[in-house]
Image (cartoon, rainbow, N blue to C red):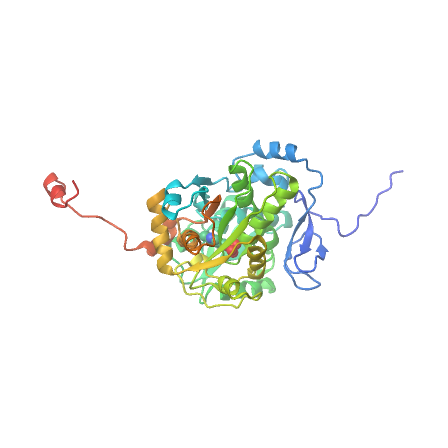
Length: 427
Ligand SMILES: *Cc1c(COP(=O)(O)O)cnc(C)c1O
């Protein structure tokens, strides 16, 4: 007679591929996979722990290279089921890594300068990567409504992903965002709620909503699904290394809002090293903020471990998080890798947007102006080494933040005849 054994409660009841458990980033306490984000022991943030023990480096590399041209080529390294590529999803990722020789000349970089251009994602920002993960978790946990607190890009990414996957969406943003972001978030047909307050107020409200019957059954991609959401940023690290021919870059410049993206890029690079997919060598991670919202940069430059919250006032609204959840982890990574965190003024952000457009034909949103501007400043200050391979992230599309470059426009207005053209002095 066959003996049925009852498994212990620590066995995950959902299939999320190689994801084995949730583990506390502070105390290491492990709990089964579920829609939880804070440690029951110490209230620290939870993250995904994996079992990669079965992987062979050569076999895995071959599997990745034979995979689809989107983030699901890395499904064996993500908290998603093996058959994820067949599900309705926007399938973001595999964006261009642009060799930026003109910009390199302008900035005096001789070691190779690249722009990882994530404006090429389905809703024109890097947020499609993280939402794609959260959506699969929402499916696994049986949620039917997707929600988020957003600085703009996330709202659009959630709206679009929900539309494609047949979920309801209801997302929350500060009421005074750029028109491009508002329209982009609304057009997919979900509910879009403007909150009278800044992002930190929106986020606090969403945390309250999760604990209330009104929010029951809702998957907040960046709150109760945050451990899954956050893993999407690892795909930036994977893609950059694969696109460099399975090599680590020497230096990488990453924008900071909550700091999640930066910490997961580091996690992704560490995984590639441990799995033997890239050769181990030192790399430096640099964080970029706007001066008008620079809590992590101020802490870094002051030598502090504690990040003091700020009230944001900057044109880089997608990065305007005054109380960044991952701030202390960003400080650790910048210090451990020998990187830095720096900030630039709104004027320098606009100059950098124009510089990138003029040199490489890439129109970045304000967040891209922040990374390019910070790269320039770090080179001028002798902090970033121009003789090393450097990757700068552009995480969003300039069409969403047109106001930032509002003075840009027509060179001349003429009548439709040659005489008028000649008189304008353009011939
Ligand atoms: C959200 C966002 C980021 C970074 O977000 P983190 O919270 O730090 O992960 C960067 N760039 C753009 C354009 C964004 O929308």
